[in-house]
Image (tube, rainbow, N blue to C red; front, side):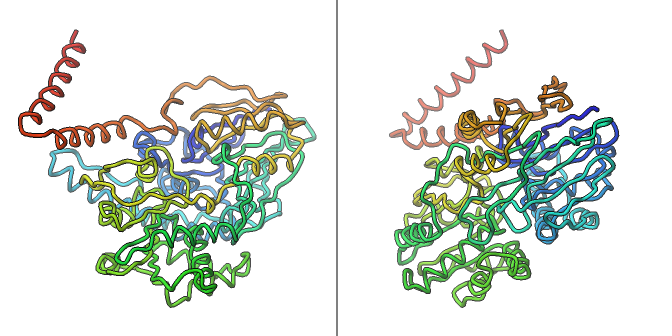
Length: 534
């Protein structure tokens, strides 16, 4: 039997999750996610798929987050007509998240094309449209947790609750081996939830496997002592510290589940008298729609009744239209704005950052992972100036981080999760992480019994799984180098250079000093051009 595993995304980076299992008779995708992070990574979304779309037999989705499902409409648009297997919760969330993604792409491309027209550049097309996203939903097929599903001949799958998000799953896959009675057993972890999620149960999964593909987002982090009560106390302290008479607390947040968890905690703190009644604006149409989905599934969630109560609070206001969003700017008392996107790469949070970053009265609180190269990561790391929509913005607002809302297990929790899956006979692949997290988790797992050494694949790596251990097959093309994945790229460096040039010119004492700075930059560029010419 021939069985190959392709790593088409989430390899040395936390986005673009996409894995392909291939035999001589069938090809099954696990996830088809969108790349986020640096511009070099995002450009992969526009390239053709690195596999033959017409040859894909089926797609199995772990969950609805865009970095796992965001290229599904593109896949269908490119000719995939097979089934998309997902839990009911994932299907319901995808039905709002994918059209929203298409709509955002259309709006952003329209804005970009207007700028390109003024600059004499070529226009571009969105990866897919809202209509494309709606069309792909017809291929979704609901899957129940814990029940075997015949995916295609020779493949069957079973979904386990991953405790990460409504509908999230780890996917167990059995692949028949020709002439061998026992099938090969693999487990794709998806995103594994932490021990203290407000709305989700602890993650679950099977034992006794051949291979595990394990996420590693927080493989280098230990959140020892985390509880919901401790998290609420820390949130309380951050809100109190942010309170200014005419200020704002901006919380860039994923619209799905993170926003709902924050809302429950804030309302619990108000009800307990720990915080005053503060106007809270959920400035995200997607968050409004997602909240309606969560209401429908409240019976499946931990603390579902608390969520419904928080969503119906008089202090909470959901904004739908652009006009309603802009009207928030006219508020002159302290308020909280929760808006997407969680990494500040798109959506209404960028409008609010543009309006508030230059003001001392503002606080920005990060409550989720910020990938390398994103505006969120750049702000989190202390940038003094940033560019938003082509405009230079001084950063005077306070930057704060509260990592206890992460939907991902930390390093010890991931190790404990894998320990519960033992034995793992042939190998573990570490994915969905940046280099420090991957290497820390790899080192941590080295002392586990009954686990071969963990492998860290690169994007587009292919492994032959037919033997007693995985064997890497040489890649023929490289879409993104291992040195680029999960790192700042030249686009980030160029933007930073422009900001530094502006700062140097502005800091020069007078016109003569400014001319000296400009002359030195020109001379450096001239010397570089002459060197290249030689």
